[in-house]
Structure formats: C-alpha cells, structure tokens
Length: 83
Image (cartoon, rainbow, N blue to C red; front, side, top):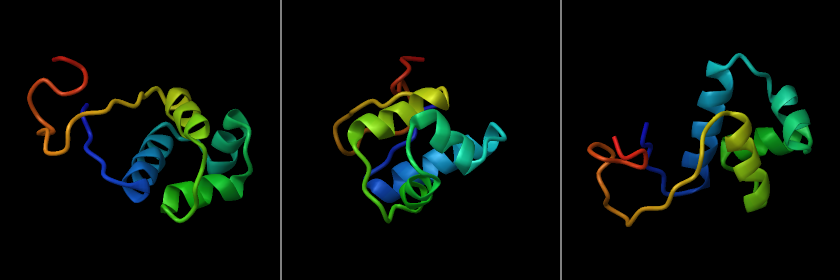
C-alpha cells in the first residue's frame, strides 16, 4: 500500500496505525527499536524528532519500508510497490 506523507506527523500517524494493527504496544515497539517508550510516543504524535535510522528500524519491525517519490505523485496506480 502506497501512503503519501509530507512530514513528521504523517510518518508518526502511519507508525501508530501499523503498530496498533499488529497488536503491539508502544513499549514493545520501543524495546524492539532500542529507544524509550517516550520516544515512540513523541514520534507517533509528530512532536519529537528521531534519527532516520530509528524511524527506518521502526518501519522494518512493522513490516513496512520507506520510499521517496516526487511531490504530487498520486497515491494510487503503480505506487512504491510497482503493482
């Protein structure tokens, strides 16, 4: 699924949505990523900054990946998965 995002808040919302869909707590995700629960809370709320490495690790744990596309690329069609 291709999900457009334009900032930290969008990224955080996506992580929260995926974490909850998998029945994982913020504490569990934090443990897997190697950060504090407070860091995950701030990340999900878009109010804290995390390193790119931390963000990518969270996505990997949640079974997702990060892809870049030119701004304005439609969320439907080929998307990041080439479907």
